[in-house]
Figure 1 (cartoon, helix red, strand yellow):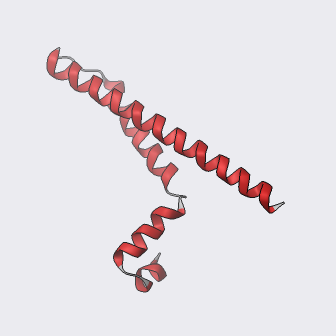
Figure 2 (cartoon, rainbow, N blue to C red):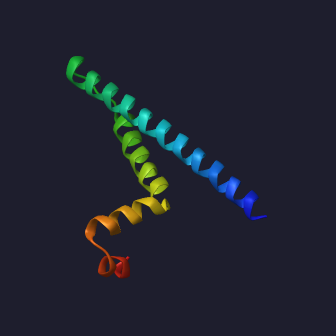
Figure 3 (cartoon, rainbow, N blue to C red):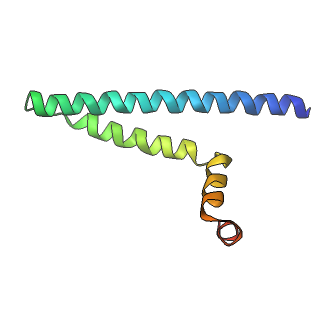
Length: 86
């Protein structure tokens, strides 16, 4: 039973990485599109900035449950007092 759960978590982590990569790539494309449109054609649209902002928020929320990030912060800051605070 534990092996099945472990496989499920591995697949879920792979899906999270794929979603994160896709949304980050989409965000870069949207921002480059906005910059080209604004500075080359002297025009802009309102949806690209909002969509990039929401994709960034989605990326942060997707990364928050990842335990490796919390461990990196705790290890970088030096240990137990920070761990107790978190």
